[in-house]
Amino acid sequence: MNQVAFTQMKDGTAEEYRFLERLEEQFNAGLVDRLMQALQNLEHGLSGYQVSRLEHSLQTAARAEADGGDDDLVVGALLHDLGDELAPCNHSQLAASIIRPYVSAEVTWIVHHHGLFQKVYYAHHFGEDPNERERYRDHPWYQKCVDFCERYDQAAFDPGYPTPPLGHFEPVLRRVFSRRPFDPEVVGEEPAGGFDSRG
Image (cartoon, rainbow, N blue to C red; front, side, top):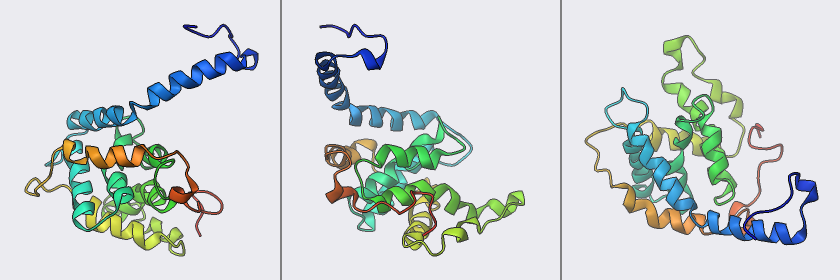
């Protein structure tokens, strides 16, 4: 079989779905390569900063790694802005969706909310509320997201910081994305009410 015969999913046979599952498994084996290519594409993304979006991502991950962050946090830091090109108004949520099946719910929550939490540094320049993140003050991961933004993300625009190349992070990407998706031992308890819940 080279392709299925059905034109509507409800008409597919067990044999066709087993065939598609094999193809999906083969395709998913290349996920890390596609993620690395997507990161590489950030080299030519949004300009105006002293570093490229790729360098910013690498530097954010390097800072998390130097601070003793575990694999989940380093991968979250590396991929936190991956949505900049395709979802500029909700890039945080896009990045969180990519990592969600493979990392702890805590790291997913941090990445999901980092864009909002970062507004504390600049929103006042646009007449917006810089303290919008306060609505999550009672959330158990609130301070972790504050720390992520302060220590890693907002500080990672420094052209003088010793930033490793993308290849440095390939092993941690391969470790994390080789996990069984949505493994409860890894993901743990997701927030009651979803990732936008306040507590």
